[in-house]
Image 1 (cartoon, rainbow, N blue to C red):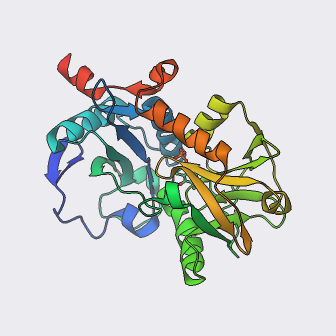
Image 2 (cartoon, protein in one colour):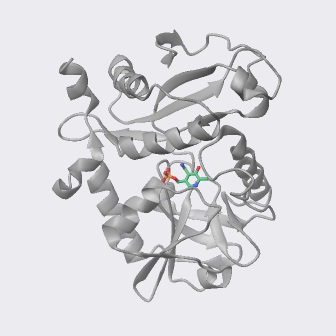
Length: 293
Ligand code: PMP
């Protein structure tokens, strides 16, 4: 499998430098983006929104990205690897084998990987639903590390998910004592008496799937207590990787997979696969851009 690194196609198994700053301190920023097969060829979903969020994270780290090169690399990798459904992972991180903490003296490297798609929540999570535990950990405070896709920040999610797995659950929910924040890599929605609510919290990643579902459903976005989530009729998670995934259990509370969750799942699939004519502006067709060059 080919990856793209600083302008060159490289083999996946080329050895990285073990002294790169990003490896030691998580000084990097990444995105998780999906390309989907559509009737007009492979399309990248909400590419501009993902790249805007990548740019915000890069700015925090004092990096300037070559955005056109990264976007071109995604189209190239889809074409050379023959993918139409794929996960795209652009990453920018500090390299140069220097282990000091002065990022202004380091050089940023930029890379993109394209992977054939498999769900990180396990195959069929969108049909079976997810069993979720409340983690004992607090979410990274946005005043300590901004709620963006900064590499090092993910240690928080990974440790919470390990704890959930040890307790026999598949996913971890961050709660700040009273209010719900987010899951390890998804935002949270609830349905109560037919009304859809997107959980809002200052420490949550501003999810692009969350924004998509808010825009498609007109749902309210607000703070939600754990008590309210436990009392909901339906709960679902949203994320580029998870898409719209029903929650069937939160600690001892079980939920059915409700009709509103199912309806939102179908509407989301229609949007990402280019079957909803009103949502075509969310799709970028890289093959067409490459062919025009
Ligand atoms: N929260 C976290 C911590 C995440 O890593 C993700 C995945 N990017 C999400 C929420 C969902 O964001 P998005 O819908 O943009 O993928």
